[in-house]
Image 1 (spheres, one colour):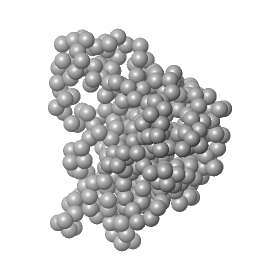
Image 2 (cartoon, helix red, strand yellow):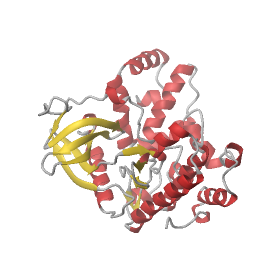
Image 3 (cartoon, rainbow, N blue to C red):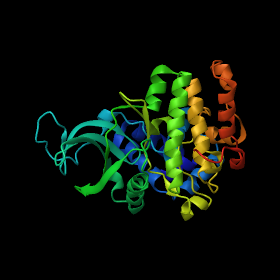
Image 4 (spheres, rainbow, N blue to C red):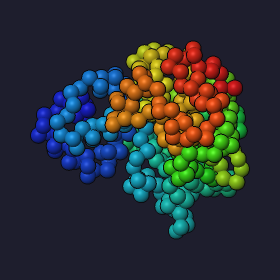
Length: 352
């Protein structure tokens, strides 16, 4: 797989591997594990130096694989997720049982595992359960990252950050019990409606900033702020920041050292993409990208592949918002532009 990514795999093997990956869901899911192992960061930094692949279809696949290395994947259809780790349910209408939780339905899937809607049989309340992907459970680094998500989010007490109730293990798989949010992600809202109304942009932006400010006050950097990690709760005008799987303490050596790349390319800060030292201001750049997406209905930086995206936002500015949505006021344009400053010192210095 490493040879495929680096473009050094001989052509006959390329064709065989390409065909297999196109048809094998489990192997494609296994690629999610690359995001959990930071040893691949060095390889990710070299991806842009490989020669273009002569086969267009294979090059497209390689671009997909590159994306898996740099960020968590959310591309697998929900109905492809294996739930073999569940015990038989007590009620026929449920999917199964995990410890004392009755599993109602699958909410979604990420690079680290699957999120399930469940009933806590002890407390008789609906919760969300994030179960670590079985193929990652044997990896010590992946387990560490999974537990870090619970510790990071649990340290933050704010109405705009998702609550973590417990961390446990069942059937050999670590899992988190979280509050269940009845609603959709900001990404789903944008996909459905396109650009948002100004009032919604401001409400969501301000509440997201409040959640980030609470995290930063605890010395935590989220490192993966994007619309998919911002939940919009039904029935109330409340936003919740989720998925602290990449969160790190400011004084963590792996944050301040260079060469470590983690996050989602379309939303990460330039210094983050380059593997340079990052601080809380990287989250503010990502917040600017979220505001841009709400204003325009599209990502600020787009490209044919991961490296093209990284190159664009390290060297270029996004398409002007008024070209896409002329209704956005100048003062909001100035806020987005300041958040998008390439130099962290030129951005707003705090989320509050």
